[in-house]
Image 1 (cartoon, rainbow, N blue to C red):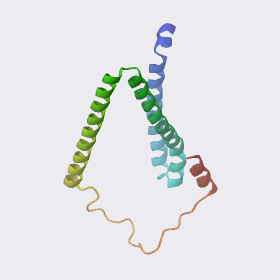
Image 2 (cartoon, rainbow, N blue to C red):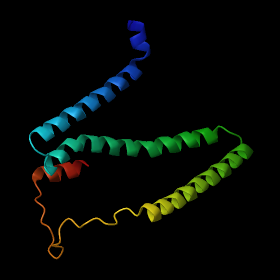
Image 3 (cartoon, helix red, strand yellow):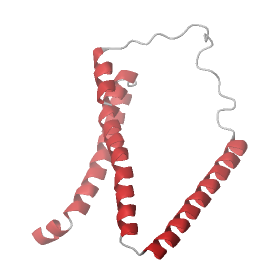
Image 4 (tube, helix red, strand yellow):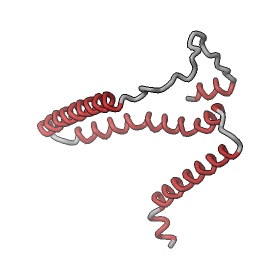
Length: 142
């Protein structure tokens, strides 16, 4: 049993993390619905660690991807590198064009936002936002 756990530790910890996150989300939803709704400030404080984590992941993805591609292409000979580079550029361009066309088709057919009422009709006066020291510190960390 100990050998199985040691060999599959990453998989087991991933499953425990997913189940723990789902249980925590369900628990927080029940706590919020039992005592009324969560206010925006509490939601912001609760979402802050996840937001910082996702931003850190985004900062890691591009450097890892670029170094992996450069290392892989650097290990090939020159004629094969050119062929792969041109195919990669063509593939990226084709998928980007397909994504743009699909996005335009979906927006014109679904028409998101049509029929929604504005939140408040008083658009002449700007809304004042109450900024606290905690908000400023969280923005600085972000």
